[in-house]
Length: 142
Image 1 (cartoon, helix red, strand yellow):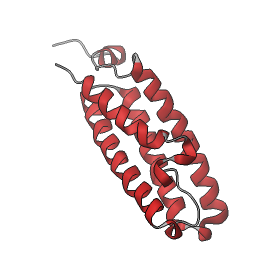
Image 2 (cartoon, one colour):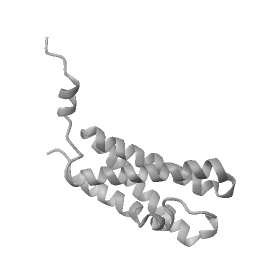
Image 3 (cartoon, one colour):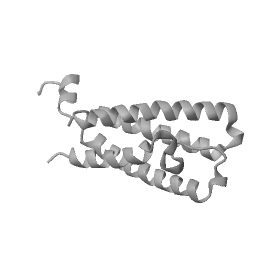
């Protein structure tokens, strides 16, 4: 019988996504996770009735950021594909919500993380998924 795969052996066989520019990507997604979780948790706990759609969308953004951070740190081909799908979904969300908040601002009495394409976050929410998609496509195994 073969030797059991050790924890280190299993991790070592995964394609590393956290290297070079990928490390910066993980760091930015981690920061955005903390920011979006903090913002949405506070807003939902204290003033949810004021703008439920905006605060719920911020919570969704927080979950997406946290999941992408996790998959990037986890590494491996399955995690890379999951992160790629999530980055694409995130980009669609940013574009839809960003456009919606510009065209119909009255629908959002308060901003979301993705409002005006992430203007309140220095446009990082619209740049991050594009960067993530480019990085993840380039890190694909040959």
